[in-house]
Length: 354
Picture 1 (spheres, rainbow, N blue to C red):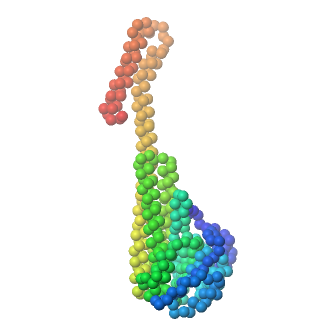
Picture 2 (cartoon, one colour; picture 1 turned 90 degrees about the vertical axis):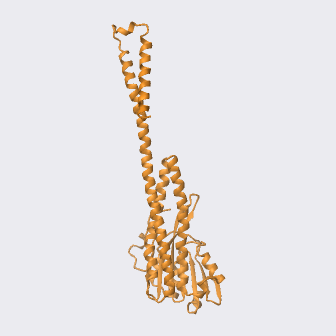
Picture 3 (cartoon, helix red, strand yellow; picture 1 turned 135 degrees about the vertical axis):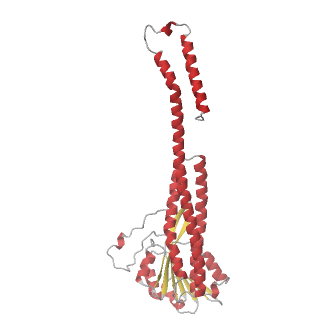
């Protein structure tokens, strides 16, 4: 997971609305599908050209156009022409480093969201920008990669279950946004498991690897927080939008997503506090371990101080030292040294320094 912003230097000096894809190329080719439905019928079709979308635009049904892969700017420009999208909207769709936001252009509403995937052996978090355009009777979703993110929504439309087939494009938009927000809970569950494992390792045996794991998790939570905090404002704007494109009956559902967003934010903040506490515990554990080592070395040095003194005294080469000629002198000095060491160890243990 990279927290670096994606380079925008290629757009320096270019006029607003210039279509340049900023981000990684995550698909080989752009793919488009159309899902057209009402309460009585549903039609799903994969299209090769944008012109195939034109017959669906003015139908009284709900039309959902899915575009996967953003590297083909010509297709995006043609799609924008067919559905009347502003050049600045097209520019924002191609700039995959956008923060979550909602913009009301009158004839349509443009929404930017972030979703995340677990990838690799380390289950790292990979971000993806999802753009949604809500218009009169149509919804257009833009994804960077092929995924099953909206699979459940497609299945509900095809099966005719729930309110989707009976409601308008605003309810479809709600379903897409709700799916994205609910996806955060799965990511947070994975991160919660990692935090628990790291916490156990921290308690048992804190090491440099544990510190690296804590720092890696802190970076993830910081990245998630950056993407989720603006989401609260975005969802709140959708729930309170005065646009005719969002009916009052659907606005209630957006307020429910707002509650889910608050739960996600609370969970992220809790995890961040836990990681900060774990970092403090790690530093305290290392400090305590160092103190224990220093205490043990100090005790050893303290025990050997009188012994070194006695050895130094009787190591002097004076000719007339009284004890040098005594037959039991060596054994007596050795006994005194052992007695001193034992008495000091007993004293240290009594004071609970050992």
